[in-house]
Amino acid sequence: MNQQLPEIGPDKSLLLVDDDEPFLRRLERAMEKRGFEVEAAGSVAEGIAKATARPAAYAVVDLRLEDGNGLDVVERLREKRPDARIVVLTGYGAIATAVAAVKIGATDYLSKPADANDIMNALLCLPEELPPPPENPMSADRVRWEHIQRVYELCDRNVSETARRLNMHRRTLQRILAKRSPR
Image 1 (cartoon, rainbow, N blue to C red):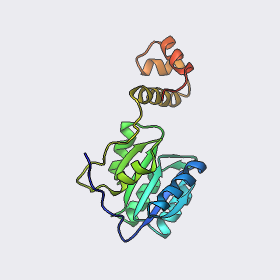
Image 2: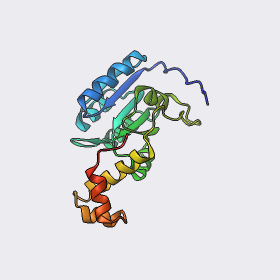
Image 3: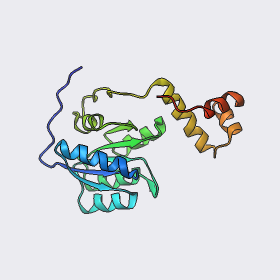
Image 4: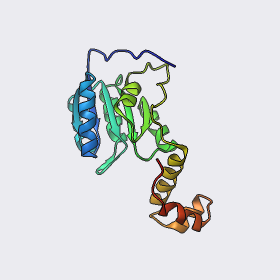
């Protein structure tokens, strides 16, 4: 499945919003090398301010930020620039948040760690086509582990409650939580 990506449009502006400073700087450099004019923000408030002052043609927004939800930035950018292509990134891939992101205007949704090529493919794919599959997708074991970790966090790190909600034996859950994350 070798599809040709369209070129970046005449407006090469790209807004990056992520509170992980090293990741943000790496992605900023990578996207500049690919031809974008990048503006970076490290918080929801800064992202909203930049989306309001100068709505970008493209955006990559982290879902969970220290000062709130990245979907607030997506909404503001969508209000100011309905044609913007927006990719939502998160370390906590969940179907419910993916649906919410797409409903309010995200073009695509990627789980971290996503590399610059995956992000560029998602930003530039034609609306009627699916982007190519990621080069290095998470393994099934990693996806399962991420899901368990998310439920565990949502249950305030209560093992018994997490096990009940996952319909899993408490001891089995404890063994999974004691192990390192799979690759």
